[in-house]
Image (spheres, rainbow, N blue to C red):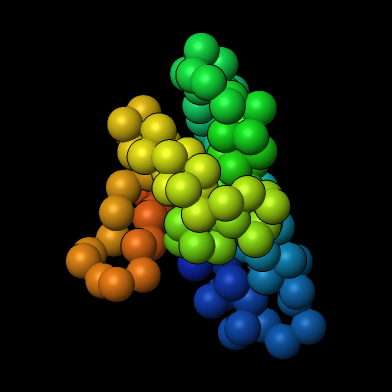
Length: 128
């Protein structure tokens, strides 16, 4: 994104009461941020569709699709947490996470006793 031209706002400070330069400067910033947000939202929607299409051929795809939807709200999951969130047993949650790992949707974070996984694609789009 190009650097904003601050000459207008700086010049406006030299003439008290001339708010036009500041207002234009701020509105250009709002427009740029809105366009960036729209682009990121479109990327997230496309990623969600890609994931769901990828999972459509895997057994348990309906639940996996719901887990993927949850990733778009919170891009970090724990195997133990999925059991309570989706009313499934730990072995089923573990199998679901393994399917997501094999599909390249999530990857494990570090090596800890509590298995934690992250969807880096989502984080890259949101914070990219």
